[in-house]
Image 1: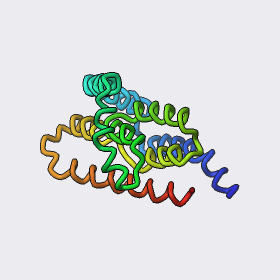
Image 2 (image 1 turned 135 degrees about the vertical axis):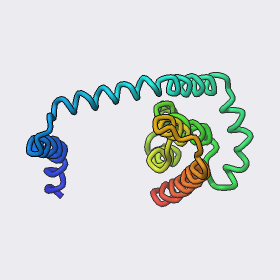
Image 3 (image 1 turned 45 degrees about the horizontal axis):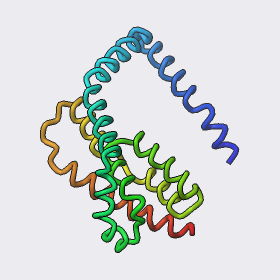
Image 4 (image 1 turned 180 degrees about the horizontal axis):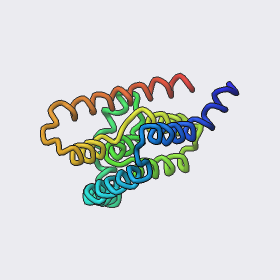
Length: 175
């Protein structure tokens, strides 16, 4: 196990030095390529900024308006039938849009229920088993100029529900 700790401390610097050495061996202007890549990255950030701002505003409006509480109360019977705590329905919905907003909701859950409670454990596992579907689709498809998403949303939703089911099972095993 100590070997893995040692390896994890040095893997990133090793990769960086390897890339620089490889670039120099291939007679590539490494610094110029790095600067060009950073400039391209900044252009992408500026291009997706409106999408990010729109998502953050929408999530803030959903939380502040009480819409999430309304949806949670509507979905509570189905959630309890599936042995999923109704308290985590808002987190599930927000997680599909914004990871940072979901993280702040997890902190609120920890304050209310505790980190070692079933709900706290389930929220933690759920954060690792699900993805920000709509954020990821909007950013990557916008950047790659993809206009036909085909089955991406259906597949992402199926994977999210699979992750939620796995979260419930794993949290139940830790009780």
